[in-house]
Length: 310
Image 1 (tube, rainbow, N blue to C red):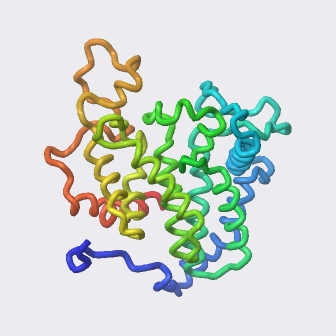
Image 2: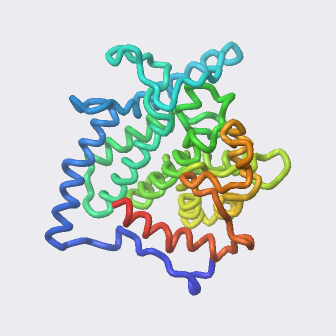
């Protein structure tokens, strides 16, 4: 990319907020909010609904170890849909080989590590960084040999991977993992999570695209597109930018990809109507996305989205 023709965000490490109000809020996040969230991810907040997030990563890591130990005798889980939110029969007796929570539960960790990264750019905190490094070890231990990293399907059955893009948030979790990995790398220079995110991105790129034999779908919930542009900016690898462009271009094409996934949802006589408003898949530009257009996803849409998200 010609840096003379495009603006670029300033690194947060080169900015120090000194305003009394905002500095106080940032310290509140570092000292209270982030530790509270870490306790929540580990189900240590009394009275709060359990997250099961770190439980799932630990369970997926355990499954990986068993696979390596057993070799050819290992029997992988077969997928059975247990609901959009999976709850244990006995909350006090969790099974160490089962997934619990919402199908998108992995994203809780990714958003937490992203917040940690941003916080560390403003205030070095060795203890917080140590906790984050330990969490990253747990998450990376769950990654599959092929790069796939989504505990819902790792624990519930890889045979159903990418079969419900509309509802099951795999690419949403994938996008947030990249966002968190990039933020933590930019804050600390540590690349363990970043390498895991790249491996996952390589796996997604190998499975999605216009080529014959690849899936022609796209995320049911946006975030992966923006995250892939960030990964491209950091690594300079065009394949990530191309994958982001593909997802943007493919979204909203007729016939809808989600119709193929969920033909039962298409009412007879209403085949030509617009649908998938929530999934932002109702339209697309007349011309293919240019390089400059996809970069605008990063430089224009991302700041606005983050401002809305707070």
